[in-house]
Length: 224
Image (cartoon, rainbow, N blue to C red):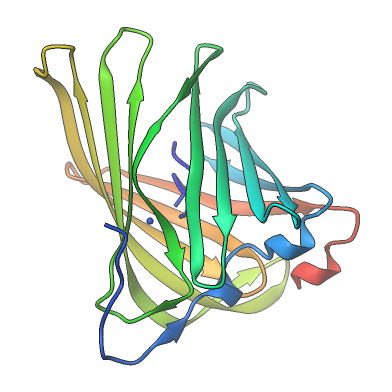
Protein backbone atom coordinates (compact mmCIF):
# COMPACT_ATOMS: atom_id res chain seq x y z
CA UNK A 1 0.00 0.00 0.00
CA UNK A 2 2.62 2.46 0.99
CA UNK A 3 4.35 4.21 -1.74
CA UNK A 4 7.54 4.65 -0.80
CA UNK A 5 4.83 1.46 -0.38
CA UNK A 6 6.00 0.75 -3.60
CA UNK A 7 7.34 4.07 -2.75
CA UNK A 8 11.29 5.43 -0.84
CA UNK A 9 9.94 4.81 -2.03
CA UNK A 10 6.33 4.82 -1.48
CA UNK A 11 9.72 3.90 -0.47
CA UNK A 12 13.95 5.71 4.05
CA UNK A 13 17.55 6.22 11.48
CA UNK A 14 18.41 8.27 8.89
CA UNK A 15 22.13 7.77 8.79
CA UNK A 16 24.29 6.35 6.03
CA UNK A 17 27.99 5.91 6.68
CA UNK A 18 30.64 3.53 5.40
CA UNK A 19 34.13 3.59 3.91
CA UNK A 20 33.21 1.18 1.11
CA UNK A 21 32.52 2.01 -2.54
CA UNK A 22 30.05 4.86 -2.95
CA UNK A 23 27.07 4.24 -5.22
CA UNK A 24 25.28 7.22 -6.76
CA UNK A 25 21.51 6.72 -6.52
CA UNK A 26 20.01 10.06 -7.57
CA UNK A 27 19.91 9.25 -11.29
CA UNK A 28 17.71 6.24 -10.51
CA UNK A 29 15.16 8.21 -8.50
CA UNK A 30 12.13 9.88 -10.06
CA UNK A 31 13.37 12.70 -12.37
CA UNK A 32 11.49 15.17 -10.19
CA UNK A 33 13.15 18.28 -11.61
CA UNK A 34 11.16 17.60 -14.80
CA UNK A 35 7.88 17.38 -12.89
CA UNK A 36 7.03 21.10 -12.69
CA UNK A 37 3.98 20.05 -14.67
CA UNK A 38 2.33 17.06 -13.04
CA UNK A 39 3.36 13.63 -14.32
CA UNK A 40 1.24 10.52 -13.84
CA UNK A 41 2.68 7.04 -13.43
CA UNK A 42 0.26 4.10 -13.59
CA UNK A 43 1.18 0.83 -11.89
CA UNK A 44 -0.48 -2.56 -12.17
CA UNK A 45 -1.18 -4.33 -8.88
CA UNK A 46 -3.09 -7.52 -8.03
CA UNK A 47 -5.90 -5.27 -6.74
CA UNK A 48 -6.16 -3.13 -9.89
CA UNK A 49 -4.26 -0.18 -11.29
CA UNK A 50 -2.72 2.39 -8.99
CA UNK A 51 -2.00 5.95 -10.13
CA UNK A 52 0.81 8.15 -8.79
CA UNK A 53 0.35 11.82 -9.63
CA UNK A 54 3.64 13.63 -8.98
CA UNK A 55 4.62 17.30 -8.98
CA UNK A 56 7.76 19.25 -8.09
CA UNK A 57 7.89 22.88 -6.94
CA UNK A 58 11.37 24.21 -7.82
CA UNK A 59 10.98 27.18 -5.45
CA UNK A 60 10.24 25.24 -2.30
CA UNK A 61 12.07 22.09 -3.50
CA UNK A 62 9.01 20.09 -2.45
CA UNK A 63 8.20 16.91 -4.37
CA UNK A 64 4.57 15.84 -3.92
CA UNK A 65 3.14 12.41 -4.68
CA UNK A 66 -0.57 11.63 -4.59
CA UNK A 67 -1.18 7.89 -4.77
CA UNK A 68 -4.62 7.00 -6.03
CA UNK A 69 -6.25 3.59 -5.94
CA UNK A 70 -8.49 2.20 -8.68
CA UNK A 71 -11.46 3.59 -6.71
CA UNK A 72 -10.14 7.08 -7.61
CA UNK A 73 -9.69 7.95 -3.95
CA UNK A 74 -6.28 8.87 -2.55
CA UNK A 75 -4.59 6.41 -0.24
CA UNK A 76 -1.44 8.45 0.43
CA UNK A 77 -0.18 11.97 -0.09
CA UNK A 78 3.50 12.58 0.59
CA UNK A 79 5.71 15.66 0.49
CA UNK A 80 9.48 15.32 0.26
CA UNK A 81 12.15 17.99 0.51
CA UNK A 82 14.82 17.49 -2.15
CA UNK A 83 18.37 18.47 -1.17
CA UNK A 84 21.94 17.99 -2.40
CA UNK A 85 22.26 14.98 -0.07
CA UNK A 86 19.02 13.17 -0.75
CA UNK A 87 15.29 13.27 -0.13
CA UNK A 88 13.40 13.34 3.18
CA UNK A 89 9.74 13.34 4.12
CA UNK A 90 8.33 16.59 5.46
CA UNK A 91 4.70 15.44 5.40
CA UNK A 92 2.96 12.07 5.09
CA UNK A 93 -0.81 11.76 4.98
CA UNK A 94 -2.81 8.54 4.81
CA UNK A 95 -6.42 8.43 3.61
CA UNK A 96 -8.75 5.79 5.04
CA UNK A 97 -12.49 5.78 4.36
CA UNK A 98 -12.30 9.36 3.02
CA UNK A 99 -10.68 10.64 6.24
CA UNK A 100 -7.20 12.20 6.10
CA UNK A 101 -4.77 11.20 8.86
CA UNK A 102 -1.50 13.12 9.11
CA UNK A 103 1.37 10.94 10.28
CA UNK A 104 3.97 11.92 12.86
CA UNK A 105 7.41 11.60 11.29
CA UNK A 106 9.92 9.85 13.53
CA UNK A 107 12.63 9.11 10.95
CA UNK A 108 12.45 10.83 7.60
CA UNK A 109 15.08 9.61 5.12
CA UNK A 110 13.56 8.40 1.87
CA UNK A 111 16.86 8.01 0.02
CA UNK A 112 20.44 9.24 0.21
CA UNK A 113 22.06 10.14 -3.09
CA UNK A 114 25.34 8.49 -2.07
CA UNK A 115 25.25 5.07 -0.42
CA UNK A 116 27.32 1.93 0.02
CA UNK A 117 26.00 -1.61 0.02
CA UNK A 118 26.10 -1.58 3.84
CA UNK A 119 24.34 1.74 4.39
CA UNK A 120 20.79 1.86 5.70
CA UNK A 121 18.23 4.64 5.18
CA UNK A 122 15.15 4.62 7.38
CA UNK A 123 11.80 6.34 7.56
CA UNK A 124 9.34 5.71 10.35
CA UNK A 125 5.82 7.11 10.72
CA UNK A 126 3.12 6.93 13.38
CA UNK A 127 -0.51 7.24 12.22
CA UNK A 128 -3.83 7.30 14.07
CA UNK A 129 -6.62 5.29 12.48
CA UNK A 130 -10.41 5.48 12.37
CA UNK A 131 -10.72 3.27 15.47
CA UNK A 132 -8.50 5.49 17.61
CA UNK A 133 -5.64 3.00 17.45
CA UNK A 134 -2.05 3.91 16.60
CA UNK A 135 -0.28 2.37 13.62
CA UNK A 136 3.52 2.47 13.31
CA UNK A 137 5.29 1.71 10.03
CA UNK A 138 9.06 1.56 9.70
CA UNK A 139 10.95 1.00 6.48
CA UNK A 140 14.68 0.24 6.39
CA UNK A 141 16.36 0.37 2.99
CA UNK A 142 19.62 -1.08 1.71
CA UNK A 143 20.99 -1.55 -1.78
CA UNK A 144 20.56 -5.18 -2.86
CA UNK A 145 22.13 -5.07 -6.33
CA UNK A 146 23.43 -2.65 -8.95
CA UNK A 147 24.13 -3.05 -12.67
CA UNK A 148 20.71 -4.58 -13.31
CA UNK A 149 18.66 -4.12 -16.51
CA UNK A 150 14.92 -3.46 -16.65
CA UNK A 151 12.82 -3.30 -19.81
CA UNK A 152 9.99 -0.77 -20.01
CA UNK A 153 8.03 0.21 -23.12
CA UNK A 154 10.44 -1.73 -25.33
CA UNK A 155 13.56 0.00 -23.99
CA UNK A 156 16.22 -1.46 -21.67
CA UNK A 157 17.25 0.72 -18.73
CA UNK A 158 20.05 0.51 -16.21
CA UNK A 159 18.49 -0.38 -12.88
CA UNK A 160 19.21 -0.67 -9.17
CA UNK A 161 17.36 -2.90 -6.70
CA UNK A 162 16.78 -2.04 -3.04
CA UNK A 163 15.86 -4.40 -0.22
CA UNK A 164 13.23 -2.70 1.95
CA UNK A 165 12.47 -4.23 5.35
CA UNK A 166 9.06 -3.20 6.71
CA UNK A 167 7.84 -3.37 10.30
CA UNK A 168 4.13 -2.66 10.87
CA UNK A 169 2.44 -2.56 14.29
CA UNK A 170 -0.99 -1.45 15.50
CA UNK A 171 -1.59 -0.72 19.21
CA UNK A 172 -4.59 0.55 21.13
CA UNK A 173 -4.61 3.59 23.42
CA UNK A 174 -3.33 1.43 26.27
CA UNK A 175 -0.38 0.35 24.10
CA UNK A 176 -1.67 -3.21 23.80
CA UNK A 177 -0.50 -4.79 20.56
CA UNK A 178 -3.42 -5.56 18.23
CA UNK A 179 -1.52 -6.45 15.08
CA UNK A 180 2.08 -6.89 13.98
CA UNK A 181 3.83 -8.09 10.84
CA UNK A 182 7.19 -7.82 9.11
CA UNK A 183 7.79 -8.24 5.40
CA UNK A 184 10.41 -7.60 2.75
CA UNK A 185 9.99 -5.60 -0.44
CA UNK A 186 12.42 -5.62 -3.37
CA UNK A 187 12.08 -2.29 -5.19
CA UNK A 188 13.55 -1.73 -8.65
CA UNK A 189 14.42 1.78 -9.85
CA UNK A 190 15.28 2.37 -13.52
CA UNK A 191 17.67 5.13 -14.46
CA UNK A 192 15.76 8.22 -15.60
CA UNK A 193 12.36 6.81 -14.59
CA UNK A 194 12.19 5.93 -10.89
CA UNK A 195 10.24 3.01 -9.46
CA UNK A 196 9.38 0.46 -12.13
CA UNK A 197 8.69 -2.66 -10.05
CA UNK A 198 8.27 -3.83 -6.48
CA UNK A 199 7.89 -7.34 -5.12
CA UNK A 200 6.61 -7.69 -1.58
CA UNK A 201 7.30 -11.03 0.15
CA UNK A 202 5.43 -11.92 3.33
CA UNK A 203 6.47 -14.30 6.08
CA UNK A 204 3.97 -16.94 4.93
CA UNK A 205 5.46 -16.93 1.44
CA UNK A 206 2.73 -14.84 -0.21
CA UNK A 207 3.91 -12.31 -2.78
CA UNK A 208 2.50 -9.00 -4.04
CA UNK A 209 3.95 -7.57 -7.24
CA UNK A 210 3.52 -4.05 -8.59
CA UNK A 211 4.97 -2.82 -11.88
CA UNK A 212 4.88 0.29 -14.06
CA UNK A 213 2.64 0.15 -17.13
CA UNK A 214 2.32 3.78 -18.28
CA UNK A 215 3.78 7.27 -17.96
CA UNK A 216 1.60 10.24 -18.89
CA UNK A 217 3.00 13.77 -19.19
CA UNK A 218 2.92 16.64 -21.65
CA UNK A 219 6.37 15.55 -22.80
CA UNK A 220 7.77 12.38 -21.35
CA UNK A 221 10.83 12.23 -23.60
CA UNK A 222 12.89 13.44 -20.63
CA UNK A 223 12.04 10.14 -18.92
CA UNK A 224 13.81 8.10 -21.56
